[in-house]
Image 1 (cartoon, helix red, strand yellow):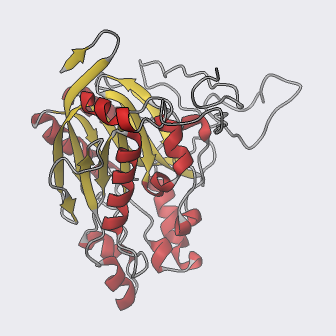
Image 2 (cartoon, one colour; image 1 turned 60 degrees about the vertical axis):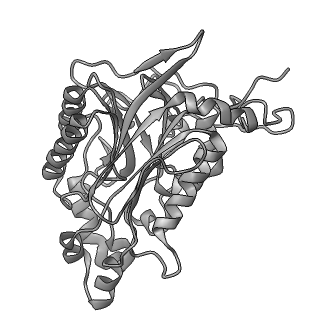
Amino acid sequence: MLIKGDDVDLPQFKAAAVQAAPVFLDTQATIDKACSLIHEASRAGARLIAFPEVFVPGYPYWNWTKTPIAGSPHFEELVKASIVVPGPEISQLAGAARAADAYVVIGVNERHPRFPATIYNSVVILGPDGSLLGVHRKLVPTWAEKLTWTGGDGSSLRTYDTAVGNLGVLACGENTNTLARFTLLAQGETVHVANYIALPVAPDDYDMVEAIKVRAAAHSFEGKVFTVVSCSTITPEIVDAVAHDDESRRLLERPHSAFSGIFGPDGRLLTEPLIDDEGIVYAEIDIARCIQPKQMHDIVGHYNRFDIFELRVNRQRQDPILWSGEAACPDVPAGANGEHRSLAGLPAPEVSPPDPNELIGMPRP
């Protein structure tokens, strides 16, 4: 439902936060499971369906439980199971989004189309018409994740003007990054998707459920936005694949490691969340609820001082080589530098990156 004011759209819709485990390192089976969950959420009336971090086809837990050498065969297995974006797997997900008439946000292990060992922790955004709206690559892999993923760049720090609001996404620990979050808020974000993985292997004094909750509540309260949190779960299959002794098995089976829920612009949960168990959390979202809280704290408007503070964001795509003296390297095929090409029959969104020195914020007087 869309309520139109004089010059503003205020969508009302149902959001769905999926909490589920992938079919570990089985790409096609995980894609099939995702499509089934999209269908289920669609039957419940969801117009925005969020999936966990790197749902396709899973998270490298071995980085936390094994030495780099012992985990290397698992890394090779994950690389081989990762997907190119766009590609046949994305086309299948796009078809499910189109059939559901819903926006779908899903985490994937994205393989570079030219470099066989380079993979990214990526978040794919699909439109209800089956279009690939965009892909965000996690800027900084967290802690042990640096053994697996290459970091992204500022080119994907953007929001998407959709029928369910101005949509932004960040993956897991990025939701701790104040500057990344503000970059999205300063582009008018009203709905934020934060996707996570279950992290039972964290230090004993680190509660993943509470860590997710405090970050989601903070972003919603600071920005006066809705935050949809989708987290994966741990299955016995994953434990069996990764555990190598009793201690690693104990770590992987630790409870209170997964949380999914939906927060309102006051920082409070809209409905009961899910902890550890698989399922789907639903909530009704009304973008008009963002208005009154902003009268008190609008940190991208009246409640800031852009004559004092500046945030500059480099949104240039970072490539390993910059050519000079010629238009391009003649033997590098289209898409070789990692840009996201169009799905078959669908043009890729044309997004011209701003000047690297562009100021993100309000214009100076």
